[in-house]
Image (cartoon, rainbow, N blue to C red):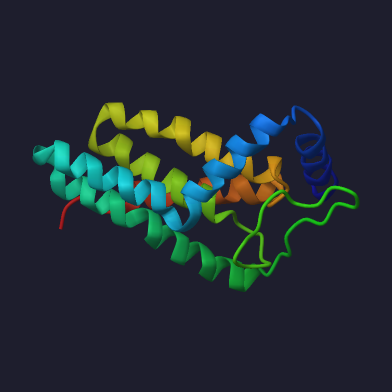
Length: 164
């Protein structure tokens, strides 16, 4: 598994790169930091959909909460971020720990919860996938970090109560 993970990472770091795509991936990564994009999106939806306001506010809070839970897992697993000779990461991170990807965890947690609130909320998975794929593309995570983060996020998004 480790060999496949590394091969996929090398492929994602060496194929399909252009300055424009790298700028987009970096920008997406910045919006995903600390679950910020999900917090903002949840707040915006709470403002426009009063019938589901409480659920959208819970979705807004879920992104940052998922980041915190993810960090607890990182502290237990302690997997270092990838280091590929000649292919430095194209971004920075607040921690040297890699598993699981916090961007993937928060993104899939909130996208899953949003899809539970409103069927059109499933469109959040488009952004979640883009954010998650950007992490190995930038060399910040192994693909398995992203997969584990996505699975953890989906589980969180399914179990979080959407009303108090």
